[in-house]
Length: 306
View 1 (cartoon, rainbow, N blue to C red):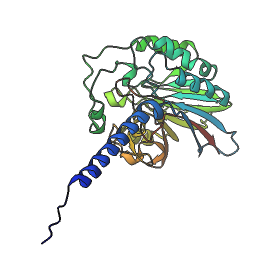
View 2 (view 1 turned 45 degrees about the vertical axis):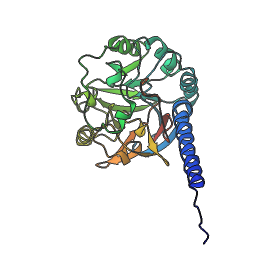
View 3 (view 1 turned 135 degrees about the horizontal axis):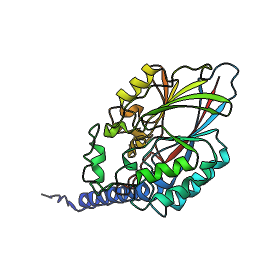
């Protein structure tokens, strides 16, 4: 009687090969997320019809979440290139710093953009320096704000003073009325909702001339923040904070929003209670979580039309 002997060796080799393939894929994906994707800077463009009939278009450059660390030359080159767009207005929605000594370098990065009118609001990484933590924690943290009492304080006042001296207007829990490229704009801005620093000022009181558009500006697009802007009569809102999910599934599907906004709505041009909301996926990330996957860094050019 013949007896067949089934050797496990081929199966073992197959499993070993598959395991090695998975490891190689994982290492390659991690390498791309750390060294590739986060330097693949992009410009997204949107057109939103919110201006009165007959108005000239208004071009707004939206930047957010630079998380600046000294020496980020690729980021500096990209931001400098944005000046060629010649926007009518720059909107900076915060989280500008990620290093205690980054302010001079941030001002170098933003230098060419100071040639244009700008408004700004702060995020938590305009106030507190990031600390080392498990990067994967980002994937399960949703709405909870971090305790910042023991975090090193960033040079927030110096940064805001530098912005003001270069002609930008702070909207830290305050409203303002500015004429930009011939259009009268009412602004309402809040301090960082993620830190619960937000105190809504509403929009400026009516004057002899009606504004061409009302713009709300915030760092973090929490639902309460978007609700309040809608109630106050905003025509459009600008926000950042979410990093677009930062680590996404193929196709850019976000797993988290880092606030109470549905992850499916955490980037791009969305509508909330009838109000367009432009959410930037940001130009950087914390220096202690330097990864992006299927979610490249991005600036946005929003053209408002009639």
